[in-house]
Image 1 (cartoon, rainbow, N blue to C red):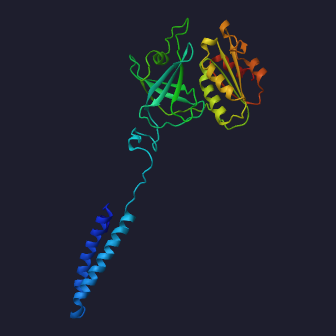
Image 2 (cartoon, one colour):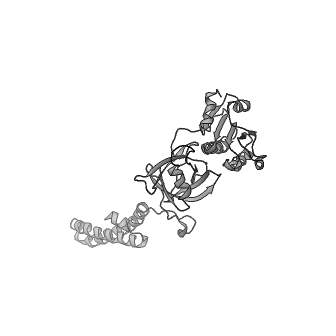
Image 3 (tube, rainbow, N blue to C red):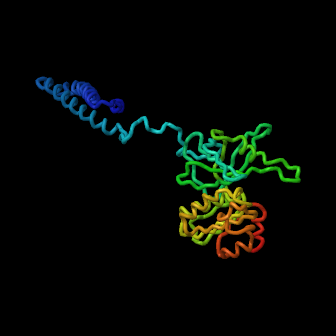
Length: 325
C-alpha cells in the first residue's frame, strides 16, 4: 500500500490518502487495545489512537512522496526544439549503414568528391587520418552488389560527414579491359540524395599525429586523398610537427585539392608544399614548383631521411622507395 501511495503525484491527495489509511489502521489497533484497558478509558484510547495515526499518516505521505518521486529538472529551451531524429549514441556501428550524398563536387578532370551523412541523422565516429570507407553499390546489370573501398579525403572536426574523392577509371588504352564499374557509376549515376550503404572507417595506413619527428607525404594523382586528410589532421592537432607535402600531377586540370592544401599551408607555417607538374600548361605558371615527377632525386633534395614517409599513388611514386629515399 505504501508503494501505491508513493505513486500519487499530488502532495495534498497523497497526504490525505496516507492519513485515511493510517486512520483505518489506527482504528483496528485501537479496537484491539480497548479490550485491555479500563472501561472508563476505552473511548479516549480509541480517539487518541485514531488522531495519532492520522497525523503520522499525513506526514508519511509527504515524506514518501519526496523519496519515491524523481522529477527531472526542466532546462531552458522549448520542448519543440528537442531532437526528434533517431540517434546512435550508445550503439556500436558494425555493419552496413545507409548514408545520404549531401554534396557532389568536381575536384579535377578525373576526381569527384562525395560528402556523405548518415540517413538516420545519428552521430558518426571520427577516424584516423589515412583510413578508408567501404561502400556497397547496387549497379544495374550486376548480379551482386559491388563493394569498394575509398580513402577518406578530409578530416572534419567535429566529424559530421565523410568525404570520398573518387577518380573515374577509364578503360586503359590498347587493352581489352573495361572501365572501372564502381568509379564510373559513382560519377555518372550517384547524385545528391542518393543512398549508399557503408561500413565504419577502417585501415592501418594511418598517421599518428602526436609523434614529433618530421613526416613526408608523397603522392600523385588520386593518391592525394589520404594525404590531405593526414595534413589537415596533423596541422590541426599537432601544428608544431614538420610536414612535407609532395604531390605530382599532369597539370593544373588534373591537380585536385590544390587550393585546399594551399589554404592549410597558409595557416600552418610548418607545412611545406611542393607540387611537380609533368606537363604544365602556360596557365599553370605560379601554381607548381618544378617540372617533372616526384622522384627520388626530388625527395632527397627537399627532405632528409630522418623522417616518417607515407607514399600513395601510381607505380612511379612507389619507385621512390626502391630508390632509397
